[in-house]
Length: 571
Ligand code: TNX
Figure: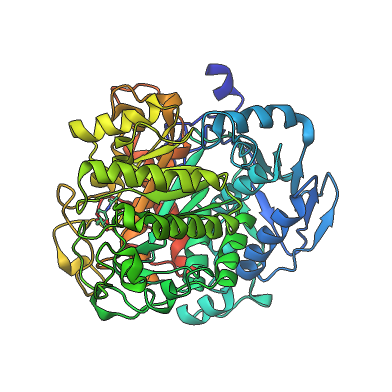
């Protein structure tokens, strides 16, 4: 340490102040390791070029240049090459670690081993160096390169990548836009040396587009916002009692009838296959995997209302626009087996065809309208249909009631930070059958929980629920450890973490963002950053809150809604 100090180097993986007590840069999630040498900064100027080399680097360069052109007004040409000038940003995919990547992917894929390699998510490591001699990001794979660019954006002033243009911002603030509307001497990023990689392979957000539908452009906007946090999964909850949101060619009535409704009569909607492909492509460009969910056998009123033959009595129920759960189910009776299995095969096949990622989420939660025997019998048929597509099945933890899960089936835990006995048992069942677990404890990771018991803070209307042990503060969203929830489910059994947002009370993308930000930063950091060095002492909450303040500046610059909760030193 003495030598490092003498050399002007300060390592700060957990302490967010340098030797002078100044706050250090706010990369969030906190990198695996980073130092901020006391040297001159990197300057992005009108002379800056994006210099790209290696497989996939050009695509990453385009995205970076796009963000920075909008924010700075600079031309920022992209050129191919391996080295650059002092004002350049060099993006290099080096093939050196290709063998290591493959091993990572094997360890990180949805199941234990077999479906390895389908994913880009094991290759997210990168190195970032900034200083007066330039900015350089290097990675073994384009995914890591992209993650590194998100760190660079956070090191630069928020205006440099703000999507609300600099000219418009200057006008709004009454200031004259500088020449060419760029900052006269460019934008500085402090000297930094970052060596970073994720802790968990699966770091997700979930959007419930069934209770309230969100148009494609809103989903793309959410993808951009979660990419900045280095999340790599967007789980889309596509079907529920109140709506069916994806075109299925074999059963056009699913959207013909089942897409017309939403909670509270707020109007329906659905994604055509082309719409859905736009979402998948936008995600893929940011190395985000879309996980589609078709919730079965419960949460199916929209399907049952669309297709009378799926009902035991052959009569379609009325569409549903309330917010109760647990009243609908596919029919377990043998008389309905043929049509039900045909429905399951068609739906899972068509959804899988739209899904380049390895996972298919088939729900399984809150099937309170079926007996335990019927539920297990339906699960066997549902998961078999899913597995027949070649995808790895994910299910909410209730699915652990089955003792015949397809190989590698992943469980998604949604009980509390203090696990209820039954949920813990059901969750261990996935591990016992060779699968892994995604943690979404409802009292910490559910973004639809209120922040505080105060409706005045809620964008002028009452947003959010409180059933998961009351409101959830930002600090509570951050105060849990994925490997400490279910005894017997440890580091190697945890596939990752996910923060769902259920939309019974939430109607627009602005409302989604207001509930998600800042709390989604907590889940992103738990998923990416290393485990606390001292498990007893836990994480550095103060450092986290100061990093969140940096994100606040970026949300301001990009017109992202967020809640300026108490406790964050907002700037
Ligand atoms: C429980 S969590 C549900 C959802 C609701 C949510 C509301 C889970 C797997 N199911 O159907 O929307 O609570 O917070």
